[in-house]
Amino acid sequence: MKTEKAILVHLSTSFKEKAAADIFMEELRGLVQAAGAQVIQEVFQFRTEINPRFYIGEGKVDELRELIEKTQASCVIFDHNLSPIQQRHLEEALEVKVLDRTQIILDIFAQRALSKEGKLQVELAQLNYLLPRLSGKGQSLSRLGGGIGTRGPGEKKLEEDRRRIKDRITRIKRDLQRIQRRREEQRKSRQKYPWPTVSLVGYTNAGKTTLFNALTQANRLVSPKLFATLDPTLRRVTYPDGVSFLLSDTVGFIRHLPFELISAFKATLEEVKQADCLLHVIDLSSPQCQQHIASVERILEEIGAVDIPIIKVFNKIDLLPDGEKMREGRKRINQNSVFVSARTGQGLEELKAVLRSVLFRDFQLFHLRIPYEERHLVESFAKWSFILQKKNLGKAIILRVFARNVHMLPFLPYLIQGETN
Image (cartoon, rainbow, N blue to C red; front, side, top):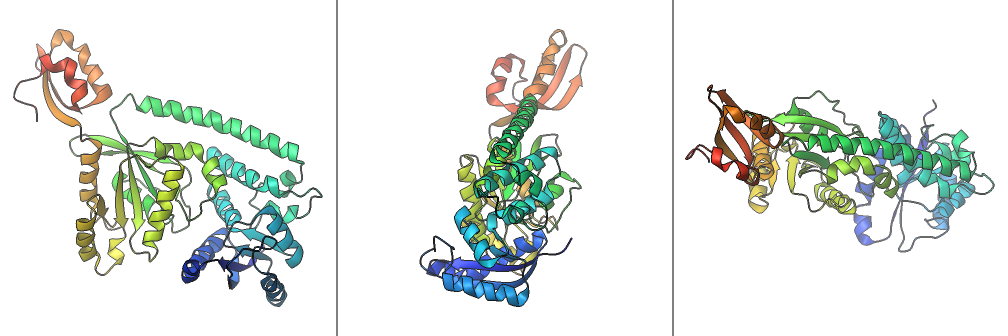
């Protein structure tokens, strides 16, 4: 497949945006390269008002036209979300494919999706994005079809009329609802056990999967690629005494994550909303650390996950020469944070200790003596407590359990006095 040659465009409409323009362009460059294109030129403009016709000024459009002719660029990519009309006018004026930030992110997601659910969610997001961009005469469909390369829903689908595309959207939604029901059934079956659930969230490339592997001793693919994880993965993490929790790795977030993706990935993001605790993984070595934190917090608010307990996990301290000093200083400022290197293992035991204090704050250790004729009660304990020790004495069964106080109320007569803590 021929590599696309791309010109990138960033428009700043305020002095604050202008000051960060290079950083925004760097992120767009990373996205475009992740999608498989070659960046050959970057164009900046400062303008206090957006041009409703072209987004950028008409003089800048003329400049782009000359640049395309000079460099033989095959596409122009904007670090913004363009309206259907703006995109159409730009393509007519420039006579090359014009893409926006949303299309690039959708394109990367299309490459990364592995499961049936992931592929359906991406296709739904793409079709919802493209539907209002289908012109009545079918103009620009070949350009709209596949983002960079041919990873969109495909030109064949886009050449169908609106009704057929809407029918496809309806079918995808129906399939996703079935998958969501299965996921809900799995979630309910997990509720039969005492394991709380923890979800990893964070800006893309913050090191979530490396941390997931470090905590679970799993072997998931660790990749520097953006959005390397699309499909949620669940693993059990067990403490030395047998107490455990479930850890979920989910899709990475990014600045201006497209609404179409948030909507389409509703079932996946439900894992985040249903968690008992969130680990917000942050790349402490990134100069955009604070902006990334703000972006993730905005998305958590959008999906309704702000009321869940959150532990900030500042990752990659091994990449900072003064990492240990910063770790101690930041801890004094923010007690609800842990500083780690998922790669070297530094700080992981502290993280697990903090997690335990949050997840099991209303749990306590109990010793019980269950008469042998009532041994059927032992099975019920496994559904809502951790049985850490079980000893059969013939006439009775001695249990050492870790459970919530409220669950133990019916079993007070079986407590061995003086042995709770």
